[in-house]
Image 1: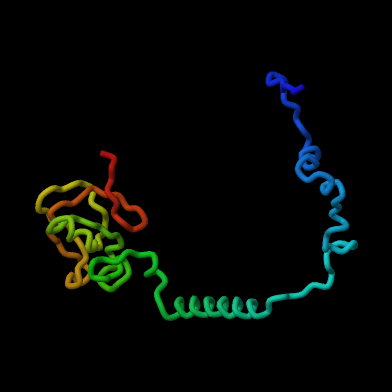
Image 2: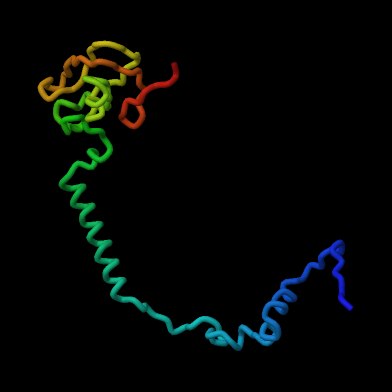
Length: 172
């Protein structure tokens, strides 16, 4: 006689212990963590020490080298150059001689879009209006002796200052 399963009967939920017994059988009931562990009865190992001296020496040498190079960079270099923009000729806006009054970088269109992507110009302030067509704007140049010079551009976009860069303003 065959047994028929009642498919409408609610499923009986098993506990975790019952699931383990179904899966592993008698092995699960015989297992003891205390008997099968490498941990000593009194707890953690008390006699411990550094097991990887070579890696510690390499790590400390790299750490010392990094600190030494950082110190050398601050003494011999100009850390402000890390945070100021460069114009298309490699001059640091707001820092280099003749560029102190021009701390911001603007990317106007000149001779088409390709030329404007090659670098920007150091300016005193970002443009407050959009100018289409040939227009002049005061920028820092190597021969302006820190006073700035008027330069002609094809297209100047109204911009706001964000982190010393002139970013297009979309408030219009």
